[in-house]
Length: 129
Image (spheres, rainbow, N blue to C red):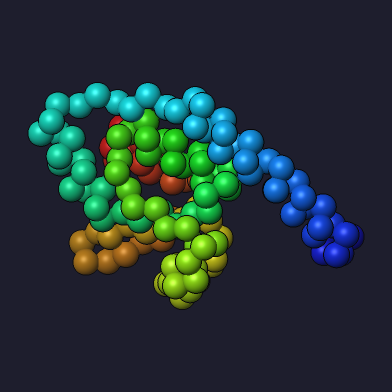
């Protein structure tokens, strides 16, 4: 059964092995950031201040989003909801789900919560690519 204690233990064990491997791969093979003129990069950085990524450090889908942010040279604040209960509660209360990755987007005095790594990466590419 999917929810059985044995299955939960197995999934924890798999994550315990894969998480560090994913982080090692990410560290050994970092993405190459896009090169922009200084003025253009400052504008991007100002816009990136309106974004927050709620994530787990070793989550493969979160790594996927962080790598896209690195490729686009986006200094987005990351909030690890596994290690910070306040951010987890904020994500659940305001975003509607504790699921990660989730991108908080401040725009025109409103806030949008964008879930799913592929949707987040498409948004980042369209806005900053």
